[in-house]
Length: 64
Image (cartoon, rainbow, N blue to C red; front, top):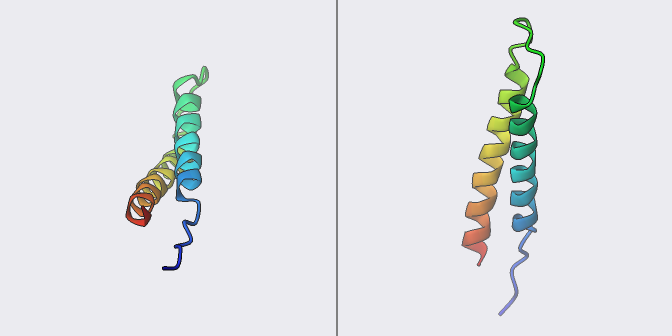
């Protein structure tokens, strides 16, 4: 039986989790808040990383 190529889904999930933790920590510790800087880009990054985390974990579970 041929072995499946895992694609390093665990590493990808860990990377997405690290990005989420970094962005949430950066938003939580921001000392200066400007009304013009609403931070939509940070929310977008967290959202995309969250989707990547869920997809990576699902793929990781399916491969094993």
